[in-house]
Image (cartoon, rainbow, N blue to C red; front, top):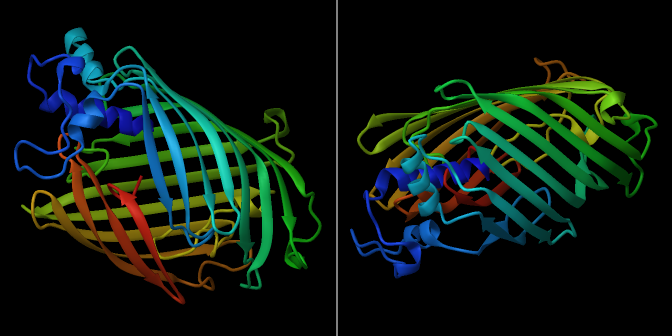
Length: 377
């Protein structure tokens, strides 16, 4: 959400003329005057009040479902961009409050509230969220067989980032809390031994972000990277002590006028007494989330995008990953592969927002995903 708001402001600041009618004087249009095609830029830039955001869920781990969110902007995105230009501090997003919920066919549901706030021309960023979750999931573990379990709990996140000078770097603390109950439905997972069904995760740590993307939704060039080190301790509200170290990076390289090469690397490491449901897992399109899970996980993806027209794009991708460290050594762990293709339609040209579908395949599984912009966030 924070990145989306920043992209709104950046896109409007670059595209808007020096003077323009007040939003109340503008007649909102759903077609682009440049090409006459369906376009939501005008609506998104000048919308006031609550913005409904429907979501289609296609994740194999929980089945098909739907969600609905409401976004409340402190001011229209176009007005936020105009205020930023007047202040001379550069584009800054409006403050946003979001509320929503979702439900899937296997009975999984979630509801939550989030708020994003910036100060001093986007030099300081705050993100806070709270959610209630009731998820119906499968644990595979050592036996590589699905064991159904229910994960219920309340989730809380607090984050505060500071931009370093006039650079593209942000640094700050992040705190995550999850008060959970995990219950196996039949038989349990013997390799886990005895464990408390009710557990609390309370972890704090440091986040370092770098972002040079030309557009946060659907980049054509630039880099996004994040480093995170978090530590769960009793003093932070955790019933178990463990450490998590995550590093991920994406880059987009224009290899020709209409061809964009995307590269992704993602590593997740843990140590200590990590709850089984919180262990790192292989996260690739076409692979059920949590299907390959262990103490550590590493992934890489390559994607090639062809911008057929200014509105339509086709893309193909492939990825590989491993989960290892507790049940298997790195050399013994299964190497997971996925492959797929998709398309995008530029639904909001001024903001660079594209929507579309990805279809992916991995061993024994096919999946499709409704996407807003890049699959990498």
